[in-house]
Amino acid sequence: MRKSISVAFFSTVATLMILGVAVMGLSQLVLFSRYFAQERFATLDDVGDLAARTATYVWKGLDEQVEQSAPEGQDSKVAERLKAILGQVDLIGQSANVYLFFTDSKGQVVLASNSDHLTGDAVPADVLAQVAGAEGGVYHELGKMGGAFDERFYVSARPIRRGDEPGAYLFVCASGQMLEAFVGRFGSNFLLSACLMLICASVLTMFLMRNLTEPLHRISEAAQKFGGGDFSVRVEDVDGDGEIADLARTFNTMAANLQEIDSSRGQFMGNIAHELRTPMTTIKGFIDGILDGTIPPELQNHYLQLVSQETGRLARLVQNMLDLSKLESGEYQVNARMFNIWETLTGVALSAEQRINDGQIDLEGLTMDERVLVYADPDLIHQVVYNLLDNAIKFTPPGGIIRFSVEKLGPEAEIAIWNSGQGISADALPFVFDRFYKEDKSRGLHARGAGLGLHICKVLVNLSGGQIRVESKQGEWCRFVFTLPVEVPGRGDLLKLSDDTTQEGPDGRPV
Image (cartoon, rainbow, N blue to C red; front, side, top):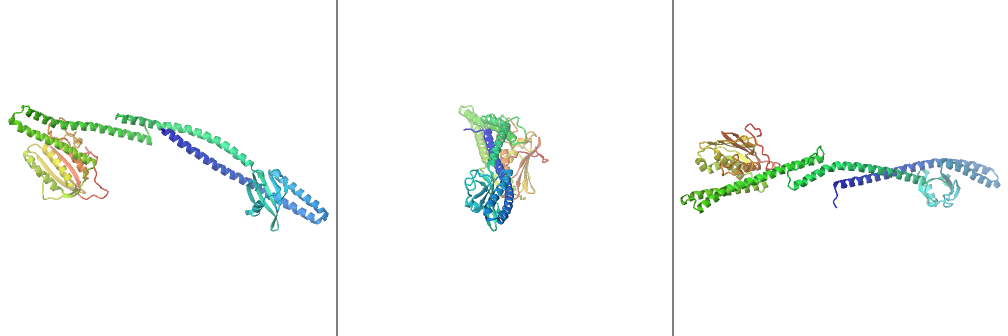
């Protein structure tokens, strides 16, 4: 069964409140009961002290009269003594609303202000033993005193000593029904108060939960629409600084990012289709021309060579896409070590010597005399330099210049490849490292490039722990600069792929 957050929250709050009310009520009941018992026992002790002193005084006076009288008059004196003590004790009991009775040393009741609640004429011996051994000389009990009473009583008992041994026992009792009545009244009043409190708390909780869950419902509806493919949906009218508002803002940010990713994916697929369709169309046209005789036999070798070039272009495009996929998925294992960056620059330049000569391009800055060590994967940096040099060769006009430079700046080295030529427009600078980006939207000029080379350079440089940027003055020159660490990084400085695409201009500012 589906349980909404409102029901779950209300159930939890109600359970906690009921438990809290129950614990509070129980603790208050115990506290009040102890206080009530202490008050009752204190009253009984005061009455017991007064009754004991009165009984002792009367008993002592009568003892003297008995000793002075003749033997035949002693019985009447004893009767008068008991009657006098009973009168005094009964008066004390009525004034304090308690019952008093005396027992002899064996527990037999010899004098009682009210015997209606006594079940017999004697108090059990074990109770007498507890009274005789009570700490402080006073024994307290709330109960039936071993069956001597027919209901629960507060009992304050003490021995009345004659010499070292108890000659009698005094019991002062008050009915326990007062406590039971108090507990009943307390329970009913507390239950009524608790019910009213729970009702008010329930109404307040439901109101708060409605305000809490309404934004969640909007987020849920937006998420369902989003899951259905509507990437334009956003959560509206959720303001504030709470967790719900943070969740709504996070959802909106996620939706915007995914919408952008979806748009990029569509553009990416379009770019791939375009890049694959162009050489395939060329290949098909040339082959069909050869097969149907449109291209004469003496030109077939020329067009077959063009077909071979286009096939190579397709192979390079697929390989670049595979390499990029491995790099961004983390499948490529970086094997970094210290090496001389000048050796890489010189080696790449020598491998492109034929193209440089064919383009009538002059190289400047290359040297084998300098030695600048960097910490990176030589294979990755070779690919970076190759792509940058390939890009420079394509866009350097005949008679132009390509210049290399390496400068050590503290913990990193800055490697630059500069070329003369048309350069890059200011509007295009922030996008040159994007996948499939070409400043020539028609893709007619230098069509053999797929727009992946510079993006791969960015990924490889970031993977090596450096940054790459481009600087240009349109119509005059273009300069690509990347950095590499010159020291082995510490354990906490592991190399990782960066998502920072911000470029810097010649003055160091982001562009």
